[in-house]
Amino acid sequence: MSGDTFRPLSPESQEPPDAQIYAAVYDAILEQRLAPGVKLPEDSLGEIFGVSRTIVRKALIRLAHQSLLEIRPNRGAVVASPDGDEAAEVFEARRVIEGAIIAKVCATPPAHLVSRLKDLVVRERQAHETGDRASWIRLSGEFHLLLADLAGNDVLAGYMRELVSRTSLIISLYQQSPSSACSFDEHTEIIDALAAGDAARATKLMDDHIAACEAQLVIEPQKPKNDLAQIFKPAALARREAAE
Amino acid sequence: MSGDTFRPLSPESQEPPDAQIYAAVYDAILEQRLAPGVKLPEDSLGEIFGVSRTIVRKALIRLAHQSLLEIRPNRGAVVASPDGDEAAEVFEARRVIEGAIIAKVCATPPAHLVSRLKDLVVRERQAHETGDRASWIRLSGEFHLLLADLAGNDVLAGYMRELVSRTSLIISLYQQSPSSACSFDEHTEIIDALAAGDAARATKLMDDHIAACEAQLVIEPQKPKNDLAQIFKPAALARREAAE
DNA sequence: GTCTACAATATTGTATCCAATCTGTAGAAT
DNA sequence: ATTCTACAGATTGGATACAATATTGTAGAC
Image 1 (cartoon, rainbow over the protein chains, first blue to last red):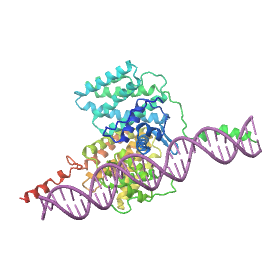
Image 2: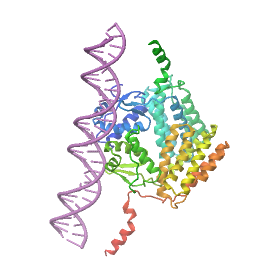
Image 3: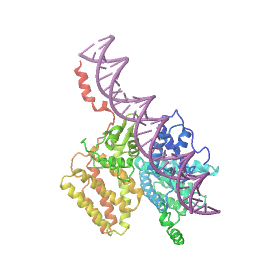
Image 4: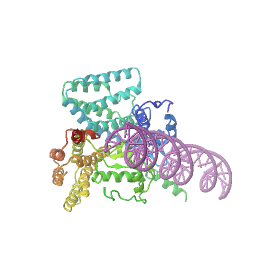
């Protein structure tokens, strides 16, 4: 992990300190500056942000509750490593919720909405062209989050915030080619369909867009999480037999 | 609040203590034994469950993250009081997610699933007939949660767990008639449609079911959460006039 | 008699302390 | 030489102590 993974904590902010740490870790995961499996020791984070472990814990608890971290008893917190099944569930949930979001946005008159969305895609393209990978990934996610905000349902938007960051983890685990995870060209197409008020086409494009992203992943058949006994059963048997 | 709002904490359980408190508060909200606005002082909960504030706080943080509690700075945690807008968003989110869940369950062969669902509805009816309000409300929610589990997507099921409990808060705030919030007859109809493999009808029934529940609510145009001045404006005016 | 200022109380916010657990290493036994 | 064991360091789990803040109660001033 490079030294500047986190921004410094600004004391003048009115946000409570744990919220700033929460946001910093969330952003780092979203931008793939924090890879799955990276350990997050309470002491280290506390030192970095200038607070005690108590504050760090508050942030970690909430992040773990969203499945962005895993808190292993007595072993500390690590960035989550969603397995293949979980990845499929996240993508399915995205299809469900983003489908509804697209429908809602289409129902509202897309007056100045379109310009905000287009502006975002412009910045996406810029970040991509200047090779600013972190910004590109973040902006790519923000497109979907802005769409969720425009739909005007905070509950669904909140779920999207969780799903987008979990998608970042999935991509960094299972995407082979370092190519476009989430193409801004497809974003542009979706905007055009929205602007035209073509709900059916917008929905279809979003579905295809998510499917295209998912199709780029290479997910191994099974990721056996805890069942070490199962994994090493043959080897253990051989060893015991050899002991006689 | 009656004295036995919470179950005692069982030490032999392998669950970490904060998870037990989390579950206890969650259940109490789901069963409407905890009403919106009730204060949850850390000391009191700690004494009840026999743990220190540290543990209680872990549970409260997670509950607040799910919008089941509100943690006011320096003022402590209270059970959330979702306003009308939030209520509408929760119901909309339920329509979105439960629609997808129904579709998924219909896609899987509903072999023994049906019996589990029917069994649940039987217990619903029993609780209703014996006047066991808490069990009835809980079972009514569990029908939807079981459906979510059967759909086989833990992400969506997790969102449903949150939405069902938030619905409990909404109902206890805005339901006028103490009648059936969530009719088990409608549950039975949904099961029948699922058993028949009629996805379109099942979806429609679920939509109607949620709409029927929402229609029973009487949501005032604006629910001024903290604005006591607004609430007592007439009385205050009368008093001031009398002073002259 | 009412309003205001101050004190007392209660509750939360945060840091720190100690115990429990885990990991790694070095030494002892075979 | 290899394996087992014991100890040491590091990290987390949880409780407690103290500071900060909000609320309530009381007394004095107008």
